[in-house]
Length: 124
Image (tube, rainbow, N blue to C red):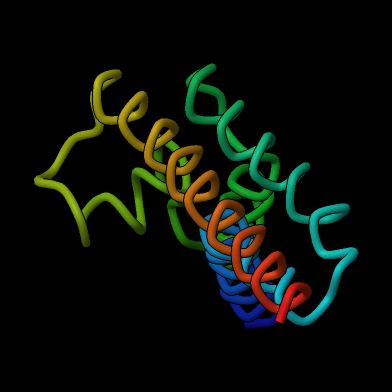
């Protein structure tokens, strides 16, 4: 029972990390040092998708699920939890490249917005 709860907690942490990697640049609006944590998160997320490797949280979650008597799952976190929400079943290399490109482009747009917003706020 504890292992299952810990596995669920890992899923929540993993989901929070993915959300932070995607949109955490907006924190720069209220915390100037946010990029110190956010940019490495973006780079890690892009690396995981581009390299086709798994985030270390995925094997941790699977290990906890197996310890709880569950079977765990194959593939990665994004493929198991997020892709079914966004894409049809199955995550091919093209989808992974698209996710990485989307992550990088979304954050480039966020940082451009923040930079322009700060320039306007500073000059007004």
